[in-house]
Length: 223
Image (tube, rainbow, N blue to C red; front, side, top):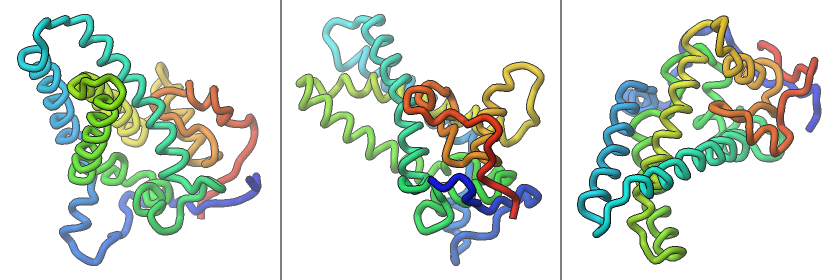
């Protein structure tokens, strides 16, 4: 990676220009954290309730909690991998072209646009449905019990929800005196080193994969 490569950032703009020709598509591309939170909390509770009452002959609350926790922490890995290799170009971590711009680049270029901070509800629920189906098939092939995936998914969704809320607060509110690590870590990714600090909810995968910020290095500047 060229360490002097620049990516445009417009931190003065409060709103990004429309991405699509049709207003309905631009509407569907807007974030709605309260609605997303309501959807995923409700779905997570329902999955656990349904499994406990209808999908097992011997309900075991601690068994469900274990799979919930596994799903929760699995999200942090998925978050890192998506951010590093899907939202950014895997070769140079750029984000200003094609699908990378639609998925993530617009958020990088206009970081103060709150409507682009988290994935909108419509594509979010589509992706969640696809992932749930893939998890179900995977659990069935590996364990013989696809229903276990529902417990895993319930934790995975709450992991995503925690990530979403942290990301939203980092962009919506000024850096607090306490618990400011998340603000500092993510702002380095946005305004100094876009090829580092991919973890939002936790830096553990940045530590493991050696993508923690480099002290004193700057790779982005305002355009």
